[in-house]
Length: 434
Image (cartoon, rainbow, N blue to C red; front, side):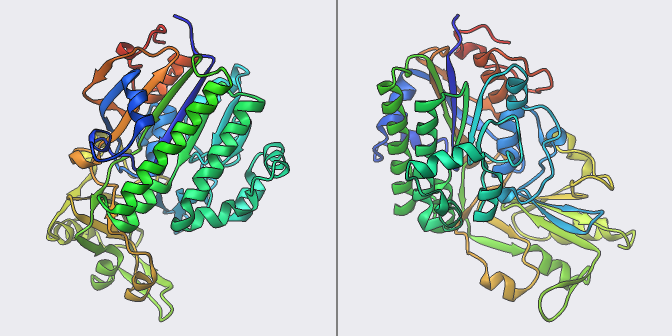
């Protein structure tokens, strides 16, 4: 019944539920943890199954309707602007308490390394948020930590360049791991939030079963193995609880719909010769296999019915109205809400973009695999393993809800998370669930 001295939450972006059982992949670190701990055979994400809403659910135990992060990309109706949670380019906060808030209030130290939605969060004492622009890293990373890393000859001046470029992603993940190891050696946090991105990037670029994606998974396992080795060398392995998981699965892309080009054809969106928006009655914010569709001021009263019919005519697309939002963990659309008036959910193999012109679409990266789709598609399930202090060995759980991660971690570190919708995984814990 002794709580762990520290907890590490390691998110391997895009770690699918099925890959751990692939006998052709050498994954010794993941399989060793699985053997000495608890495995959830499927971690069920929230909708849309994209990085920023999922990671926010992981630290709140709540659905997007309550924490407010409704997609990687959403739209601000009042300002008429796209909101980019992706890359933490927006100051829009998480709208409820997180694990780091509860722990900071109790005087516990939290570290975040490339964890989404940590920009300008004082409760994360040692913090390098997930950005893509070097100037944002320089401005918002915890200054003492940033300086220490540079003094130890770690190339923090390359964080932005390595984050932006998918081929250089392995270097970013190496740097993130070295940052975590520095903290474990110098001032071990009670909770460490660590996020690796290479596997996600390589699946997007090359495909789910590509040689590149398979290499990325083996590389992620090697980084995890180094983390475990250093914990052992420091004498901290036995007192640490380690949770390793994906935030979503993946599907290969066969069909792409450019939603805002469809809206242009319907004369609900207009652009000038440079591709700039000149008139916007409807806007679609794509999130891969999902999209928010916003019906804005000035649109005819018949617009929603017209859009339902138009989008439902696309093969492989489900149109979801507000009557189903609550069941999906989404809020009602209001003038101050980032929730679309309609949601689109793609079938397996279908992908959405928001590129409003053919020229913009042609210049954009082409994804051959994607996520964002409804979590009911089996391929969207993520992997989940936890082992170490406070965690039972040899437990297998068929299905774990993403809502349960934060309450489980709260039990391990001994804090309450009263606003969470999920529950601790009591069957996997040796500490008393809170």
